[in-house]
Length: 318
Image (cartoon, rainbow, N blue to C red; front, side):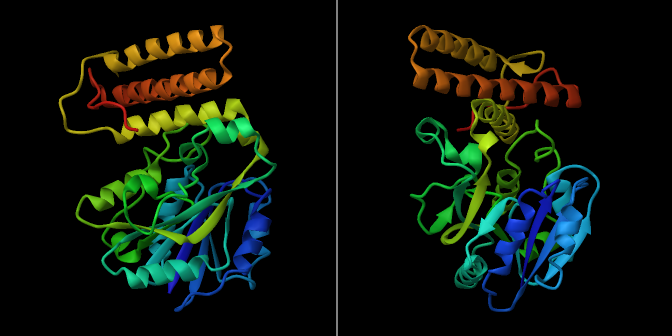
């Protein structure tokens, strides 16, 4: 038995197609159930979910407090079976997805975490500049096709396709609420943060490329404005993930001085690329600048919350 979980917020545009895709799933040995957590939707999400009762082994749960991780934590107590499978409300699974995860979990009993392959499902064909310049992993949660089956790190386990042994949650592990999707401005990397916490006590993660889902990429998410916003959220998350026990660097108003230097260097790179009319270099410079802006913002948030004179962090995480 395994349990699939995802949270949704105002997902009416894509939920019908996503849930229709779940109907096509082959059942793994031992069976499965699906928990959908409505995280305060004000659209037709609840009615859409209800319309699939009887066609799916479906359980609905409401969590009005905002935040994807808050919603997922509310559902962890309802897991049945030995494996919890996580995805998102805009993800389309291949028909053998659960069968492959079940097989991987049974074949690798010494692993606690399994990360499958995530492919893009473009709403419209992507422009060539996007494919050439945009890092698909941090921007669209798309996995690297070169990854082979076997041991992997937390940074290769993505939220749209992640399975974790239920015993981990029985031991009290929960999603962090300080680094999570919420609204349009947040620190990215909640799945990475949790998996990193789990791996420290000696648990292991495995990449399972035969377990495949497709992440829906909307047309508006292919626009530079959205992509650079993603860079800021990525920077915020990477900064928070870099928190450690090492002595803090010199800082001013809670922001490490090296980040100010990075911002200055990136402004210079922006000006240089603009003067040369080098569109590729300009795009990269804008990405780097927004990434560092996100780090600066997160440093200030942490500083304000903790009342510190200097944030306890180290350098940039790639």
